[in-house]
Image 1 (cartoon, protein in one colour):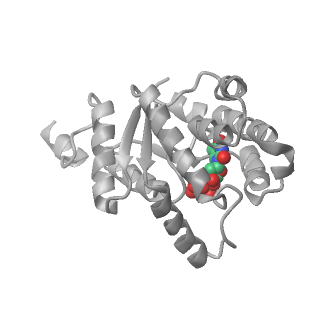
Image 2: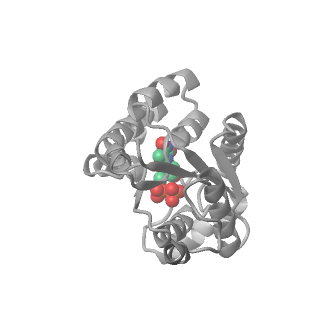
Length: 228
Ligand code: TYD
């Protein structure tokens, strides 16, 4: 497909949404068409499932049932949002994707072989070109979530944020292990640095991964336009 697919992963409070917005601005300045999307959600059908999952209404189904719902939402998101965008040649920036299921539902005890089956069915061959893992220690991530939930009227932590510190630490390690196993598509970014430093590190990872299509950091699309 003509487009480019970049996913963002990490624990709670890693700063993904801020950095996705910044990367979008940078890519657009280079003349790219960018869509930002998220999981669970990203399509009308999947957003309904998101509500069930994050409110905790689906918790009684157990981790295996929740994994199926994440997969159902993902299948709809892939079919109706991601594939059409990639076919148009857009850059797709996705806040969480299949790696989150491997980590969150894997940590919750769902068998890895079963998760792989669900993943294969849900993604229908649509794998990211690049996955940015924004890594922060669980303590830092959770303290950011606490500040956020006090200021954004969200009514406190959601179903998956409200787990114990031990769980958050295990998820962090699982993301790091995954990045090591599939190093060819991962860039691990230190998310404990300040926002500008994280932004620069992400730009550089993206510029390296798509070197033939992007200018190095610092040059803008307009300079290149002028020199044509
Ligand atoms: P969201 O508010 O989007 O959180 P964040 O800002 O941390 O990305 O909520 C998504 C939550 O759902 C998050 O806690 C991670 C969890 N999740 C899973 O457990 N499995 C999945 O496959 C996905 C996509 C998310």
